[in-house]
Length: 114
Image 1 (cartoon, rainbow, N blue to C red):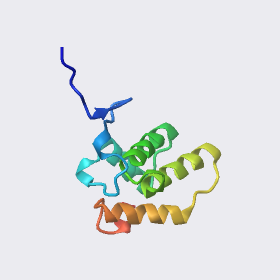
Image 2: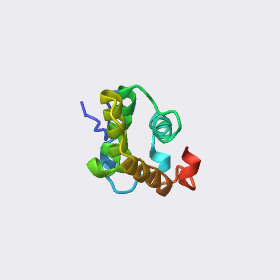
Image 3: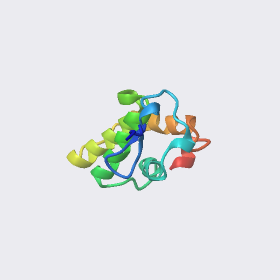
Image 4: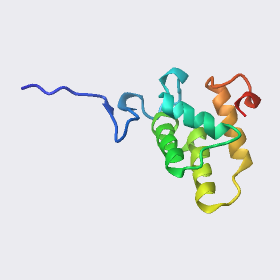
């Protein structure tokens, strides 16, 4: 009996592409719909209020983005911290997050994300 080897694994319904982990380039077309939706929500006027949803997006960005230095990961963690502790969030980190989303094609300008 032969074994098939797969490069995709998951602990939930969001696939993890092992061959494409912690790359410096994130292609908008490779982002799962649910992660794109959560990420857009994090940039919007009414971001998600469930920290588990936010951490799901953080996990994806950590794995498929730039690891711990990925701006989308950093903002998701910052927003989850804000939700958990009710402390103000870092505005500079939010601006970096919006700039990052523009750079990978989520919008043409930061204002369009809000």
